[in-house]
Image 1 (cartoon, rainbow, N blue to C red):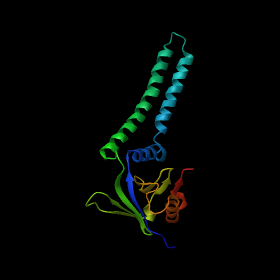
Image 2: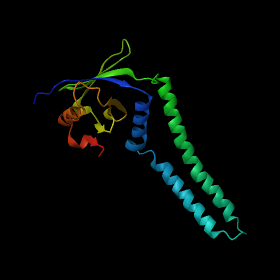
Image 3: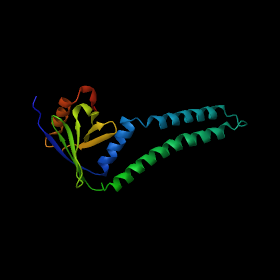
Image 4: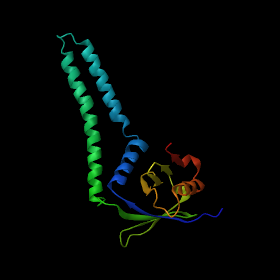
Length: 180
């Protein structure tokens, strides 16, 4: 089957980067689970302390300590995550949309050329690509489990549906993930 070469000159801004970081960390890696389980355990423990408090055994005080820690630590974790992503986006100069790399999809694989002068292009064959996740505003193409390209909608030389169909022709179904 003859495949059309698809070229995507990728332009991203801070919002695109933050949405990707949120998806990658919380959804794909599932890093939200541990803080939520931790919080749930401490909140349930606090409720038990409140229920067993008879005024003499300090159950109310222990309940408040557990509740504060159970809500405070996970809240601090999530606030730190969002703050660090904003700082990283600012360091990368993503205040405005800017060209960061150009991705070419060919029959052989994925080629990426960074927008930085003198940067080497990186080529990855299709059998090495970890997967593609289609989100409402972009496709996240993981060329390795820890390396992805953000492909925002409307930036390819084909329509978004054609881009997804092309990825479907290159990758097996178990490596394609579409948000419904």
